[in-house]
Length: 174
Image: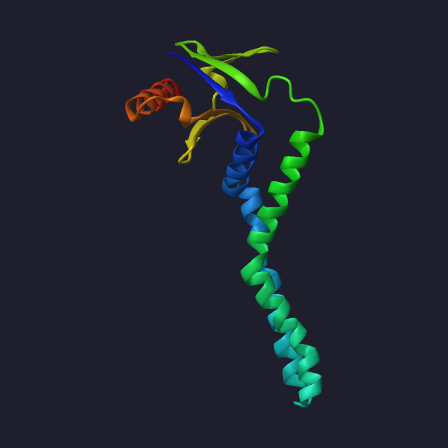
């Protein structure tokens, strides 16, 4: 099976965001919001319990309550927005020869071969870890944080996408 497609910087931003949202490590970091929001709420309650209930004092302590709510409701949105911004900076920082532009992928019984203007790469099926996908892309992982990015827009039909997925999955199981 052979497919041709074009990748741009947006495709790599999407890959990184997909990876971050599915990474166990990143999920732990994002879920730290529960600890911090609980911590600030605990401080608020502790101070409230041991202090006089004077309005001026309680207003100043309400900072802890506000921080608890901010961490709980806004932390993950803030974190992913910052990650996306940083990925865009990294991608535009230097020449990305071979990452963007026209790509050709050849899938055979031996593995996956990619060719573009700057490089050729081959990965045997033993080196392919998993196939993941979202609505717009297939991600063929060859390492914990490295994957072939195949946009679904390069397929002409749902049947072509299904054939591609089936071909990858068939070879992953062997």
